[in-house]
Image 1 (cartoon, rainbow, N blue to C red):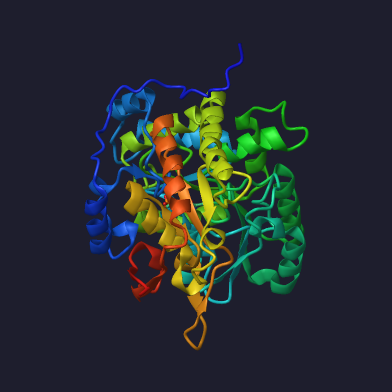
Image 2: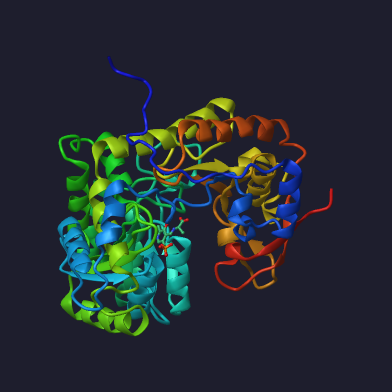
Length: 459
Ligand code: F0G
């Protein structure tokens, strides 16, 4: 018999209670958090879809690794395991452990960046862009046009526009610090990048003598899409597909908090010796010695095991199909979504959901607040709160899309949790004309979505 139901391919051995709050409690909590869910206590959240980063449930194999972690300062056995796991996956000789992805970003973009430099990506994730801009360099996004139309169906909306890439490489020449493919494209809807696109990007970079880096934190999920959507790939394993993509790149930055199924960690992997040496100097000054970076031995064990487990075909099938399950339910209800459904999250098109809320009143943030109030669901705006800037006259220059991301932690929630989320949208749709936008009261200069304070606009 072939079942329609995709079961979670694991048993639950340890549980963490969820405190069920009332709507009245949540109204108060949201006001106290200045309408920014990053400022909410996690105890007041029922279903936490803020991020899939560092929120995975670890396996028995990973917990067993935690117990045998070698905490030696130098030459740790656990480091050897992690180094081998990264080396075998990426094929890259130099592996630098870091405490999370953005530390690896700071090291590589701090080294390659600086005033006058330009970085080009399918879409820079927010911490990537922030690290590049912090160095004084510029970050340019060139997703394919299809990737910017939420409702448009395309198998690889994470792809880079290679025509624009060629033009930019010619225009900026040696000022290009690196070209980056983020797989899957987190800020562009969790959409995959095809191996064909990565090969085209790689070839252009080689021709122009520019480095090509992968932001590979969701590379296993990306491999699932390549295997099932890209012609000729079906005969390869998920791991082989990932290895082919790494083979095209000169380096990779990974947040191990995603597809390494760990709660903390990251790495920078490089082929070039001289660049690795420069980065290693920064690593030792700011993260730690080369055999642990910012990590404890037990973290490195969890990462090494996670990098193996994540390519398991049953795990990946469950992972992608369960994200799609939520997306399909919302789509059937008529919720406007980024289509097709991505790997780690469902992205709602808040501009289409709330056409009466102008972009400068942040329709995405309004939906984030609505989901928390109605059901204790926490999620994040990926739109003009996260990526908006101001022009010289102080007017908002909006982001290209107003999305809200429901990110699914790995191996954490069951089908009934996800059904609860889907059911909440029935009420979201019923109340869609009553929802108000927000205005920003306070904001920091970088990464403002983490700590900005809002208030609802008057009716
Ligand atoms: N690159 C991408 C594509 C990411 O999604 C993230 C983190 C990072 C780099 C930075 O890694 O958090 O370990 O420092 N994304 C999280 C998210 C925060 O919620 O999507 P980090």
